[in-house]
Amino acid sequence: MLSANAQTKIASMGKTLTDFEIAGEDGMYRIAKAKIINKGTVVQVWNDEIQNPKNVRYGWQKLYRRFSF
Image 1 (tube, rainbow, N blue to C red):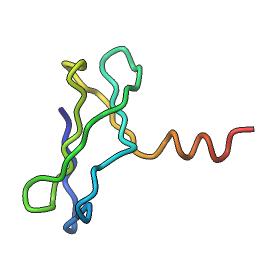
Image 2: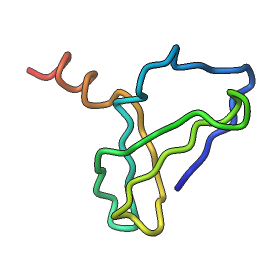
Image 3: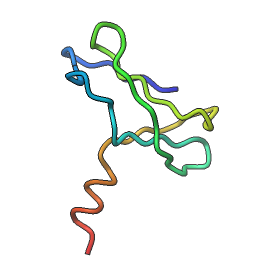
Image 4: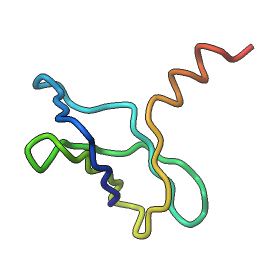
């Protein structure tokens, strides 16, 4: 599980957070679950299969599909 602190409060407006991916020590990104915690100041990201997460990315798949040739 990785968390990122926000400088301002964030909200999902009641929607499920999507488009997050997380990578472990092998560098392979997998679809992740995410939720907002600590009164809207932290996004917590995880995948139950990854024990030691190293990196998180957001929206990369959408960006890749949009600009791939």
